[in-house]
Image (tube, rainbow, N blue to C red; front, side, top):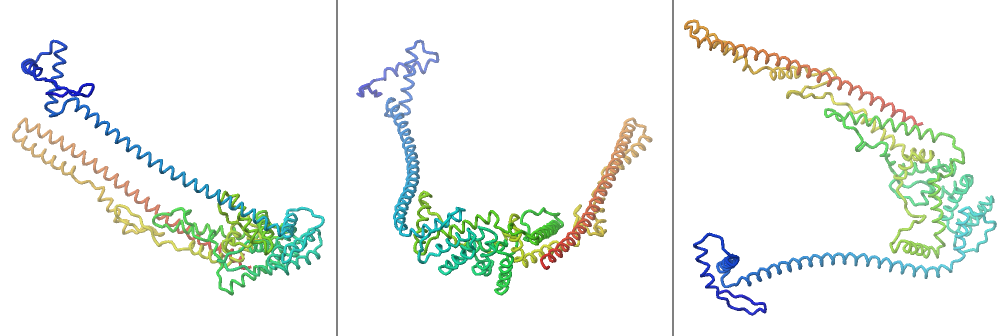
Length: 572
């Protein structure tokens, strides 16, 4: 009995027993093809029904097909759910990233709006300091080269820039005495700021003004350089540059130099080393031979010693030349640094408004930077350490000659110590011998030649290695003996076969003799070839050793000569 589902899903019962009963004899008794189309369809249906009856007990074929489709649908649905889960995870990640970007942007926009509002309030407060603002504006105009016929500024109590601006106006108009009076008035209000302003402004206006007004000011503001590991402010670096370059005159330059040397000597400070000139090369040395890797190190030390001598010669030659006053004016890079420092000093503001101006500048930077905090420079901020600046002044080829000479004198002891270290490396004694390995024998090589005992041992090993093994000689004697025995037997018996064997043995003996002779010749040639190669290698090793010793002596002599010249230039 098979259950069949109708189109309206109403099951009906179909009795297939007669059909199976009719078809079974034909399936069991006949192997011929069905006669009609009906018979073929009947046979296929009966076969399907038979499989259904055997494989799926109690289930119709339609139910089985539906179950298969249901399983396929469930698998597809599960795959779709997995894909949707992956997509949801990806979308969640994208949304998180976008949310983070949006939050950052909103925070920046919020910070920008807050800064804008605060800046608007600060502008209202800063409006109370009109006199100080006008003084700063007029001073910046003068520094930018504007020609102001008259300078009318209201006095601002406690603000040093007002009398300093009047002094600058008088200085630009050629009234030096009146400028001194105004600058002294500003100094009484704020000595550090007023004197820094006078020194920088005088140096940027003319070399003559720098020499006239800057020397005394620099002595008060920068009596000596601090310790090599101490940091310098922007204003101190500006005074250092002007003094070292000779802009304030030779006396100011010499005073700062000697006072710094005395201060360092009293405090026990060591001059900073010039690593760019004297430190061992980290990766540029060409590797030397394996038996003597110090050859390249000695050559590199001698080469760097020669370069050190040439550099010091160049610096001392430039520093000793008579330099016109006009050339002592700040170079373009130094002038830009000085102008920036001077503008920062002027823009600082009066004591009351300085915090407000600093906050306004910060807020303006936040607005311009789209909400990001920015560190603003100031005229009294720390720039770099003394040792870093000294090395830069000394080793930079574009530095002015007087600045390089100034740095060289301050680092003289360190340069001499570095030169001595280079000479020590260049004069390092080479090893007494090198080794040559061949045939498992290590032969010591010196400038006098190779060790004869080890050399003879190497020759014996070559001879033992090239001596034939004796198989061909043994075969030769065996063939000769066999041929002799067969010959004697053949003479006694006169048997034909024995005569044939005798002839064959004689031929074998001739071939063995030929083979033995060839092996002997090859062995002789191999022995001669390897002996010649050994002699060539030994001769080359001895020659290389002698050349290395000669080069080492040349490097040492050259380095010692360069050291004497360096000492002469640094110890006049």
